[in-house]
Image (cartoon, rainbow, N blue to C red; front, side, top):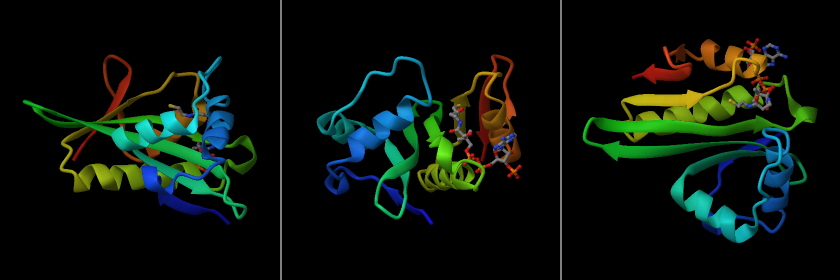
Length: 143
Ligand SMILES: CC(C)(COP(=O)(O)OP(=O)(O)OC[C@H]1O[C@@H](n2cnc3c(N)ncnc32)[C@H](O)[C@@H]1OP(=O)(O)O)[C@@H](O)C(=O)NCCC(=O)NCCS
C-alpha cells in the first residue's frame, strides 16, 4: 500500500532527502547526494510527485518542470524512479500519469523526456502512455 503526494516544500519530512538519495542511487551512477535544503529548492522549482510506503518512506518519485517560452509551455519529466523492491506494481505508471495530468492542467503543449535505450522497462512505460520517440531519441507527447 502506497500513498501518492505532491511534495511541497512545507511538507518535506526529515527522512525525505535520505530516501530520495536511496532512489537516486538506483537511477544514476555516482549521484550527488541531496540534503533537505536542496530538496526544498528542488520542490520549489519542479513539481515532485512521490509515493510513500506505509512507514512514510518515499519509495518512488518523478519530477515535472515547465518552461514558459515564446513557442509555448514545454514540460520536462525527469528522475522517474521506483525502489527496486516496489517495481512491477503500477507505481511508476501512476507517477508519470499524475505528472502528465499536472502538465495538462498547466496548459503544457509538449511534454518531453529523455530515456536511454537500455532502460527497457522505462521505454515500455513511456511508450505505453503514448510518448513517441523523436529523431533525437528524446520522447515527447503532444496534448
Ligand atoms: C521504469 C520504472 C520507473 C517503472 O516503474 P514500475 O513501477 O516498476 O512500473 P509499473 O509497474 O508502473 O509498470 C508500468 C509499465 O512499465 C513497463 N514495465 C515495467 N516493468 C517492466 C519489465 N520488467 N519489463 C518490461 N516492461 C516493464 C510496462 O510497460 C508496464 O506496463 P504493463 O504493466 O501494462 O506491462 C522502474 O523500473 C525504475 O525505477 N527503473 C529504474 C530507473 C529508471 O530507469 N527510470 C527511468 C529513467 S528515464
